[in-house]
Amino acid sequence: MSIDAITEYINSYGYIILFICLFFGIVGIPAPEESLLFLTGILVSHHHLSMGESLIYSELGAFLGMLTAYFWGKYLGKPFVNRYGHYFGLTSEKWKTIEKRYRGNAHKAIIFGYYLPGIRQISPYFAGIAHISFRYFFWFSLIGSIIWTIPLILAGYYTAKVIYINPKYVPYFGVVLFVLFLIQLLWKKMLPKNKRNLK
Image 1 (cartoon, rainbow, N blue to C red):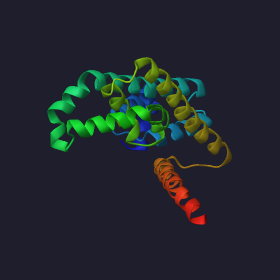
Image 2: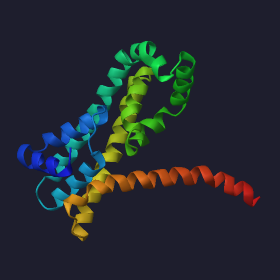
Image 3: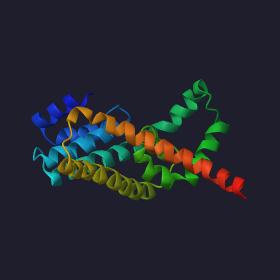
Image 4: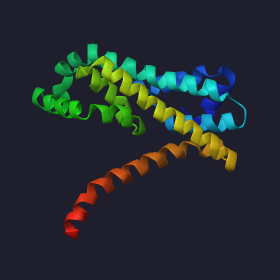
């Protein structure tokens, strides 16, 4: 779904579109979530949307999407993995290894996984399949959804206050964020090697 189409839907149907796009973007149906949040901030800046309602509907969409995916993973994921996992090379031994690694880094995957497309869709299913405590998942996914949705909306809002942004170019914002994230990951992996070489 293009940003132009989403903008038209927002103008026609209001904030529920923000909720729907973010909800289904989390559970796995493709949607330009980062771009949508940034665009929301721009629309708020131009008085097309209310800041308060935009923040509430966006946050609820992301958070409830996480909870839904968690419960689907918890009650449907393990039977699916047991029955079809071998088609993807996912043996019980490999799954045990993946589950152990996920459990050790679950809080990072839940909170910061929001910033990485693909991880934020997979993470809640993994949490459910791995039977991560619901209370644990609830609070970390709530924190993650807040520090993901609000900063991106505010970034769009304050950027639009300073410079004019054509909404047609907003989709590229999500791509830029993804590239910057990958660069950061590569830098962190290379940094220890550089330090060792200096010694």
